[in-house]
Each structure stands twice: as C-alpha cells, then as structure tokens.
Image (cartoon, rainbow, N blue to C red; front, top):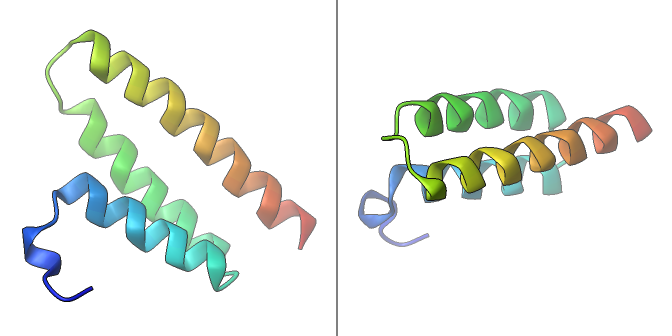
Length: 70
C-alpha cells in the first residue's frame, strides 16, 4: 500500500487481517480481528453497525476455522 494513512482505520485493520491469513499467521489475524471488533463496538448504534457486527463475527468464525484446519 502506498498511502496507508489515507485508509480508514477499519479498512487498514481488514487489510492486515487478510494479509495475515494469506501468510497463515492466524494468531495475528485473530488479534487483528479483535481490534476490529473493538473498533466496531465503539461506533454509534445504527443498522450499519449491526450489519458490520454480524459480518465481522462471521469473518472471525472463518478465520478460526482456517486456523483449526492447519
């Protein structure tokens, strides 16, 4: 990434998690996932937040499944 400071914090977290998964660094990915969950939790209560929380939980489950398969 050329200009990571221009990325939103959540997008930067997501990118780091995806890279960690690609590198099979699932413990790091899970740590990043938790930072993302904490970030989402601090957002104002809206329908978008609820959708984000749901998809974020699903992604966390997928990361954990991949970790368990290795």
